[in-house]
Image 1 (cartoon, rainbow, N blue to C red):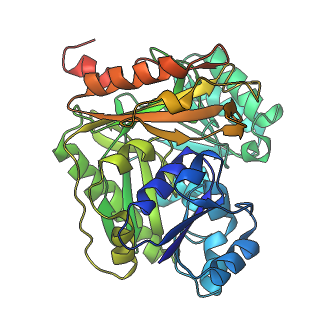
Image 2 (image 1 turned 180 degrees about the vertical axis):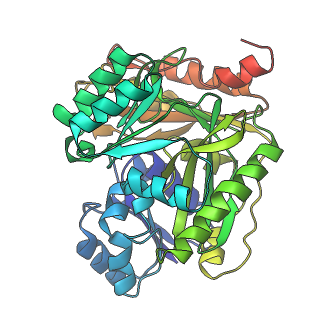
Length: 423
């Protein structure tokens, strides 16, 4: 069969890489794909937001299954267009994708179905939001309601940070229209983890958990980014906690969406935090996490495409996982998540060892040279017998291709090491 991956980032590279390993797959297409993805997929120059053109391509090229990577086309309704054309696609409808497209929608759903999350209020009026801030104080979390590429969240530890953040979202329009509505919610303390599940209606199949590192700099300092690295498994989060999260969060969410007439099919991502009262939801996404996908899929020993087809057909999928630890670290452009230069030359990527899994996110090829073409440039994943050996290998790989134009965090996974008494 032929498979189409919609998107062109690191997450989509990992999806295409995994799909290309399936015994069921003849050809993998990626639209628009990237220079880096061309090793595992035939790239097609169609924008991820051009739903009609993508559907036409899928029909003309006998595509039996389409997987959508980024949130923007999902929130925009690509799945509805594909479904209307009789095409098999794994992803949520426009109505279901609101769980990521509108944080206030997600909060209202959780409140209705008693899914554990932080207390919150939603505002469209700046003065009302400011008055509420004065009432509740800091620490507090501010979220632009709409899509903001993973950067629309401000964790304010002081009132000064909170006031500055609210002004940036609602008055300065730092996140454009995504900030026309703001969700102000209780600050939760605890260990964070990412729990993704493959969902079809009320059928929920959890994947191996991961932990993402959002802050730009080592020691979890600096501004929030789209993610600077991730690792899986997460030893400090027990199986009992994961089981509790599946039972109290994922399953009631899927069931609630069926009841509300917006049945979810696709990848439901839950960003969770383990509080003293148990796991609670920080955020929901309607697609694979990035960079979590780049460490979870390398640990999946099952045929990824077979798993997706089984779920779409209402069957029980076989999900098997490697016992090894996967660590993935992002190489980012200097200045990210703020302004940064493009077309900066990278080190020799061909010099990376075969065991290093290289997922391109924002690169471009010029002759034999690889150049930067985005904020998050690439991610390298290593599988190891333990977290430290995997991380050491990744750090060594990235040091070999680093230039002054890029940087990376060397401490990915430090929470797990500290929990086990290491540094």
